[in-house]
Amino acid sequence: MKIPVQITFRGIDGSPAIEDYVRRRAAKLETFSDRMTRCRVVVEAPHHRHLHGGSYRVRVEVTIPGADVVVGDRPSEAPGHRDLYAAIDDAFDDAGRVLQDRVKRLRGETKAHDQQD
Picture 1 (cartoon, rainbow, N blue to C red):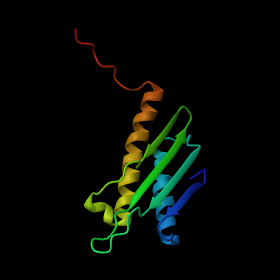
Picture 2: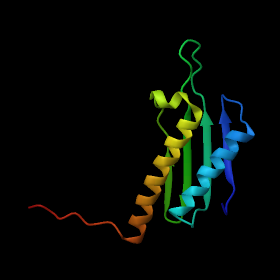
Picture 3: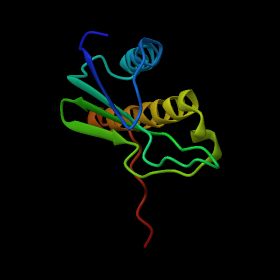
Picture 4: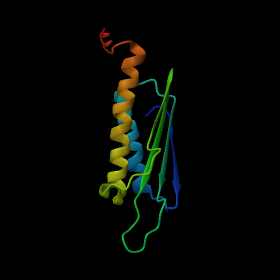
């Protein structure tokens, strides 16, 4: 990746393995846009539940000229997010879809919907 990825951990201890995984997923976002100017990732465990385990939340912020992409604002209680790597994958998959859509819009490649009278 051309730009450094800023990774922040909240309520969880970071590890080199998690950081490396996040950096590899962030590098794949460049397939949608090679003009990224910023990538910030926040990994957090917002609730500590002793009986059921906590759900992880991953927020991905990407800046490209003309658009900011933010994914993971809302907490999810999805069962898959009890696994940190699944939460990271979901956040980056969402970020990739949104980034791809934004790049297409900025290039004017989206279809205009016909107006119904």
